[in-house]
Amino acid sequence: MIEMTKPVVPAFAKFAQRIAVPFSPVVRAGEWVYVSGLAPINPETGGYDILPIDQQTRRVLDHLKSCLEAAGSAPDRVVKVNVYCSNPAYFAAINAVYAEYFGEYKPARIFISTAGWFGPFDVEMDCVALVR
Image 1 (cartoon, helix red, strand yellow):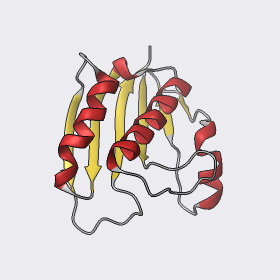
Image 2 (tube, helix red, strand yellow; image 1 turned 135 degrees about the vertical axis):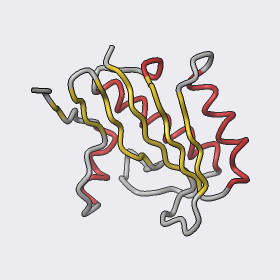
Image 3 (tube, rainbow, N blue to C red; image 1 turned 90 degrees about the horizontal axis):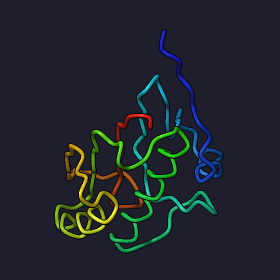
Image 4 (tube, rainbow, N blue to C red; image 1 turned 135 degrees about the horizontal axis):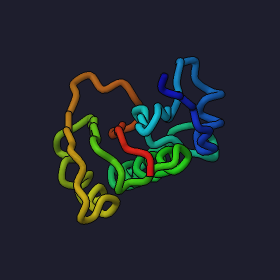
C-alpha cells in the first residue's frame, strides 16, 4: 500500500480558511509529489493582489517551490508542469520567469491559454515531482 500524506504549507493557511473548496495544495504519495493548481495568492492575506504577469508568475513559482519542499522535493525533481494562462500574449513573460526557476533543468510541460478564465489572476500552475 502506498502511504499518502498532505504536508502543511504555511503560505496557504489563510487561503484555505477563505475558500470553500476541497483543496490540498500538495499531496505526497510514496515517492511522488503532486502539487495542485496554484494561483498567485498573497500568503499574508490569503487574497489576490493585482500584479503584472511576471510578478504573478514569480509568486506562483514561489508557492510551487514551498509545496515541493514541504513534501520533501525540489524544483530539480519536477517531472511535469502544467501552466494555465488567461491570455496567450503572456507566453514570453511567463517563460522568462519560469526559466529562472528551472534553469538548465527543463521538466516536461504544457502551456494552455484558456477561454473563460475564472479568476482574478492570470496564471496558475500545477506539477508532479519525485521525492528527493
